[in-house]
Length: 497
Ligand SMILES: Cc1cc2nc3c(=O)[nH]c(=O)nc-3n(C[C@H](O)[C@H](O)[C@H](O)COP(=O)(O)O)c2cc1C
Image (cartoon, rainbow, N blue to C red; front, side, top):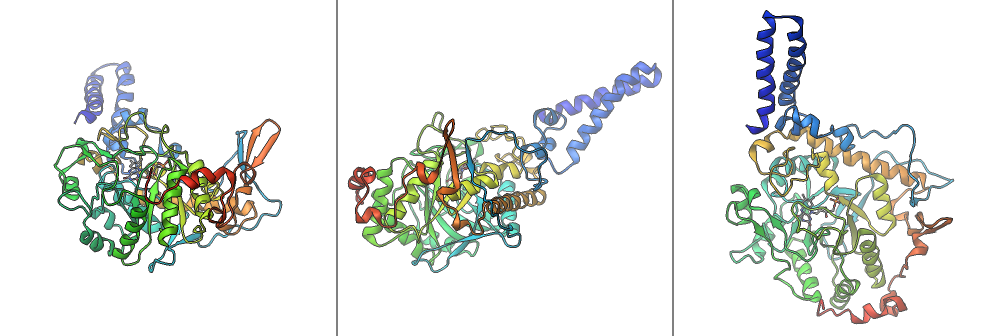
């Protein structure tokens, strides 16, 4: 009701002034005119179904939040821009003097699923990154899911579990399991294998991702503020209504790299051979190498690893963490790619990348740095109507995206937002394909670090191939180069250190 007060006030004033003006001079009409126009505009804001923030905040929303065309390419998603660029980039992709025709038909996909996986999945180049029902509203989750179904890409459920809203839209899902084991949690808060197997068998679940950490808050348990723990979420997560949910900082089911690798293999078995992977924000190279050593020792590898950069987003992260802990995406990605190449497992493990991926050139950049596909969280939130109000943790999101308040959520038009999500993903991937074509590249797998260049100082540019060290397949096993030797020797498959 408080949100409608400005509109009510304008309506009352307009009505009062109009009544008074009927008996008085033209000056009264001068005052009544704008008020009447504002009242009509406010009425329109309430009735329209495209901008949820205006339905929640008629009139005032116009002053506070710019229209979505300005916020995201979700509405028009046009492939043309007027007037050219105005950036003096210090990093750029290398165009070719022999470009190729962009393949306009089917967007490229990457097959996820190593030799131990019996139900591989063809992943799109851009997917919806992990965001839980809880952090997001039911309608936002559903709109993302329907968008994913329309565009044939995947939505990661986030660690809050598989909710009915994830299952209603028919989109492909990556089911994320966090340290709270929501969705497959036993009475003591541990992992319930039977529940996991039942849900993993659902046809919508195409992959399972075990979350070790995320960029905005590595090493800390995820928090869902009490204001967002509605009865439905409490039921889904098996926690009390209205109480803040804090997931443990680490997993109970494993405590060493070897146990992690064995648990991943167990998950794949329980999931009937669907692709299994894990998500992390890399801290130390030695720790990741310890996991690689465990893979080699056990002869087991995940089907994918998602690398999240420390620049990643969150719904409610601990203060002071974001951007301060963990490797930024470029460094994390190159570390994980090199480590997997170095132990000879890169051809069976796909790498996903997340962290400020929003445009076609972001996708191509990440592929050149070693990723096979990308995920976006905040850009997808924009596509479902996020206005960047930065109130995700308070439950008062004006756009009905990151809230559980039913009144605010109701304003989000699922059908419209699902179309926008689909359009945003399609146009962004098309941009990536066009950029690759301009670089003379037909297949994403042809991208190399040599295609990305950085200006290191005035008058000097160096490609990523020169800037970073790139290991040869199996090089760590055969004999690590000096720069890797200390970490490789210290990496212990039986201890994270
Ligand atoms: C609202 C919100 C909720 C999130 N919830 C999760 C989650 O449940 N699990 C997870 O692994 N990451 C979560 N993340 C992190 C994203 O999946 C992603 O890794 C990170 O935001 C980087 O992507 P971006 O820069 O495209 O936002 C969340 C991010 C946001 C913005």
